[in-house]
Image (cartoon, rainbow, N blue to C red; front, side):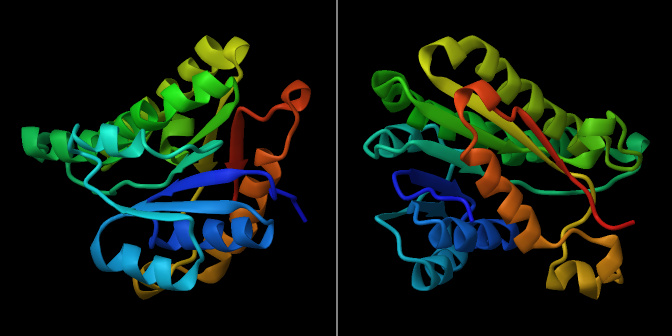
Length: 225
């Protein structure tokens, strides 16, 4: 099992299915958790997982940056985001804003919140969750989602190349398929077609423990089929 006993991890999107699996794995590995999210989902996560801080904030609002800067963390894991499909010819400006605000703007604000502290301590790790469509650079019926998740990947990898000499590194997580959640089961997906969330979380914890000279920058997790 990964040992993260000396790490404080800010988990953004707390209460979501992926975030819950990661939170459980991080707790088991001994990490201190800072949970960031909204409303009832965040409250349920805070009841389930011990946390040094619980922050209810809208990450689309630039005012959240100063609030996040008050917290010292070693690692940021950003799981916040939305998924939507639409025919290309029916996509609207509102669809575009929704995908990029949910998936990219929230990451940008979270990074702006934690980065000054990481640079000051000359140590930090930023993980952004992209998508299989972005890794393949093709998402038919989900072009805007795919583009926003590709932006997530490009942003995190650019941060890595810019800041690694200053002690801050980046990792892009690509779930290469749907994650096994009650919602996806209800949608008719079979378990063998989906990714085990706890197994995915174990891979995340493993990546967080890699030394600088064996760092993981891109992590692709596949379902069985």
